[in-house]
Length: 442
Image (cartoon, rainbow, N blue to C red):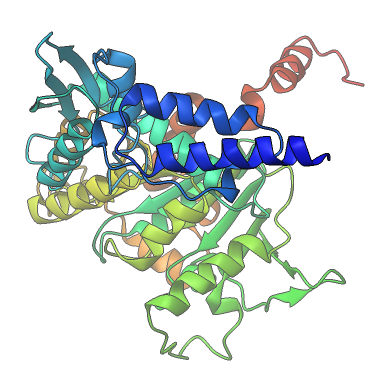
């Protein structure tokens, strides 16, 4: 570089510094940036910049558009559902006036949504930060049934996309059996429903998720122990044609008490889903849930978002109300409800008279309130208790009994309304057509 060129460059640099050290307008700022950008010999980092005019950075006459508002609202998350309110379909309307005032309509899952205040505050904060907005008003209302269904579908898809893979095939229909309380016979329902589904020709697995209060081994009549294969995965015990997994197949004896805290319960469920060699062609995996709405239920919805819930209740009002809370928990956890099974529906004596010992109609009332079908009504039969204690489920020990017939009817309704996911694929439908035509599949 010659001396003349070097002196010229120094003079330019000095003029640039002088301009930057003075308060600038937007036009000056533009000129300064142009000067430093066009001068290939001096990078912008070589020159200390100072601009005391705030107006140099402002952008005037920015229109407040719906797109800009929706972009801002994507930063507002529903704390319970875990998605932004735009994706979840909670933003119902966006109105922006020329003076910069904005009105936003938000639909909440329920009118008394506990997250209402937080969502409103986040909406106001995000939209108020937009240039040109002079005021924000939020109008909230409750969603209708169709909107809630659409929202749950989105939330369920998000949960499925974010869930870690398990050893349960995504084509397996996962049926969780819950009641919200103990003593309604959900374990007996789980066992007999599983066997009835197997009798219909489906490949069935049965998971005892009642970690503390396991009873499936006793009810199904097995004293086997779980063992690990070469791949170190636990091999389910095959009992009466179904795959069975339970903590009762791990402990030393049936009387062993498990003194585990909530975290251990979730870990046990995770192990049963991730470290068990479940068959790839399982049509149904029936999961016997523990009473209540605690750790296992919440962990199941997180680990296995494909799960769906069958609610078991007795006709008694108290049991029905608790079962309704279990259904409410399921919906808040994005577990779809398949239906209701009413157990101990009535006792018929040897003379043919039926006595409603626990009331009447509780299952149908609960199903109507939840908007789901009543899948079955299982009569109160002493044989269910006696056969279960002997390890001989009634659908196999006394298939001619009214209770066994009721279990088979419930399984048939469940299979007809909710077939295995594999049967709903194109390949599954073609296979069924070929089977109906008695054409051997290749």
